[in-house]
Amino acid sequence: MTSEMKHTILEVDDLTIGYWQKKRHKVIAKDIHLSFTEGTLISLVGANGIGKSTLLRTLANMQKAIDGSIRIYNKDIEQYHSLEMATLLSVVLTEAPSSKNLTVLEFVSLGRQPHTNWVGHLSTEDKNKVRLALKQTDVAALQERKCFELSDGQMQRVAIARAIAQDTPIILLDEPTTHLDLYHRASILKLLKKLTKETKKTILFSSHEIDLAIQLSDEMILMTESQTLMKTPEQLIKEGHFDTLFPKDALFFDAGSGRFTIKS
Amino acid sequence: METGRSYKGMFVLLLLLLLAAFVLNISLGSVAIPLGEIFTSLTGGEVTKSSWNYIIIDYRLPKAITAILVGGGLAISGLLMQTLFRNPLAGPFVLGLSSGASLGVAILLLGAGSFGGFFGTMLANEWSLVLASALGSFLVLLAVLAMTLRIKDTMAILIIGLMFGSVTAAVVGVLSYFSTAEKLQQYVFWSFGSLGNQSWTGVLILSFCTLLGIVISFMASKSLNALLLGENYAKSMGVQIKRTTLIIIVATSILAGSITAFAGPIAFVGLAVPHIARQWITTSNHRILIPAVLLFGSIIMLLCDVIAQLPYSEYTLPINAITSLIGAPVVIWLLVRKRKLMF
Image (cartoon, rainbow over all chains, first blue to last red; front, side):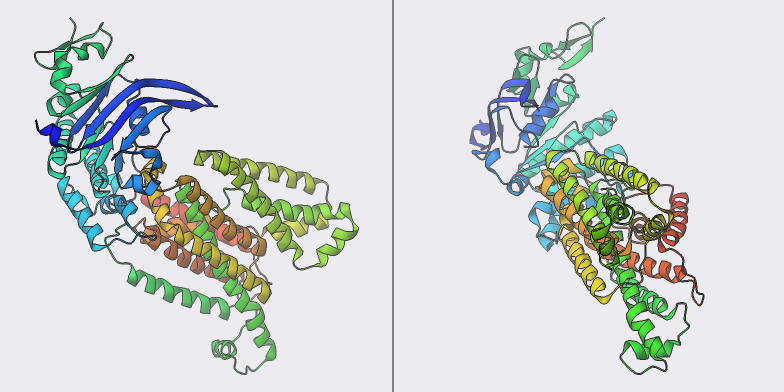
């Protein structure tokens, strides 16, 4: 099918993630094998504390892997200079910007930093990319507003606009739908889906919205205590992997509807 | 970083205000000198009284230039610290630089008596205070840098700076306890701060240090802008956090350290001026904020000095008291009006 014609952009082999504490390490997850293709929307699901954020931070090279390799365009991420890395991969973090006094336009245009000169001068091309990012995320009307005036949903769109302005082939998002109501959760995820189609970017997001993720993702990464799997949602459902996601005392996964239901 | 509007008019206005404050500062003092005579003297012409010429060229002019350097330099280092620590309460002395300077001066003034001989003669030298203060700040700077290289968390640096402050305050306390009233008075006078009595050599050295600090700050403005988003975002955009932290700390130390060495610990300007400037400069872009804060700081310092001079009277108030007396109510007023101290 078409997926064979697409290029692999990021590959993860035999990865072990965790924390370094005084020369010893605490392993959070191991034996991780992943492969991302161009223009796909990938969701990362798993219970709280299973290591989703650690995996995202490791992929973004914000935290050192304990073992194994992560390659972007067939080159280990350790070998990229930090500025080069910033032109390949951008992030949307759960944290709000430290300075809420920034306007939306300032916030989004900061995404151009890896492409600008030493004083950060924005060329016409930079400005156009910022305008485009604002338009693609539907926040162009907000550009004069200060960040502290925005609602959570608007702030999330603006944060995504900043990542798009950074113009990288890969975007990682850490729980982009927290604090949002159902409508805004769906609209953010639809936006991500649209961006993968329109811009050929590869987008990975972690989420607790398993129902929505199943409906929208091209592929899913499922993290449990024992393993980390990457397959299409259909395969994961067929092979019954969602049953292993949570302890079985409160919920069960209904393969027919593709959602979790409360056990009565 | 795109700012959305131009600040050219604002800068022209600030430059004009600076010029006005400069002229006002030079024309007012304990001795009344007509404005025309002041211009004649500044342009190298003949004035009616030769003592006027001396007062203007060798006292008021170096004092006004020192005020500009001190106000601008402290305001910029305050801005740098507020952005680095992402804390609106940070100022130029959070790293403990002024505490280091006080310790150096305290050891020289209060401790020297007990060492006798050699140090006694050193006291006579006009440069000894400057040297003691610079040495004190420099040692604290080295300690802070050594810590910065070892720890990851920026907030920890802030706390370490505060701890240095406590330790030096305690040592100064012990020294004061054992020293004579006369020596103690000397120390207290130093801690009031002073813009006057600078030699032209001193002004030249201070200008060089301040200029260096400003150039380094300006070169770091791109990374400073990235830091507004927080460390993680900055890192994801290719900013090398450790190197940037080091550059910002070095710039602050050069600015705050040299200013404290020449003018003593001047309170409040560094903390308050960036907040005052932000009332008119709505952008957070450091390429605009740095020059704006520099101008605001210089203007405010010149005006504070005018007040401290108590024009036409024989008395001069301690500059340190004036900056706090004016600075604190201004910040309170801003807080009440805006309800929020943004940075």
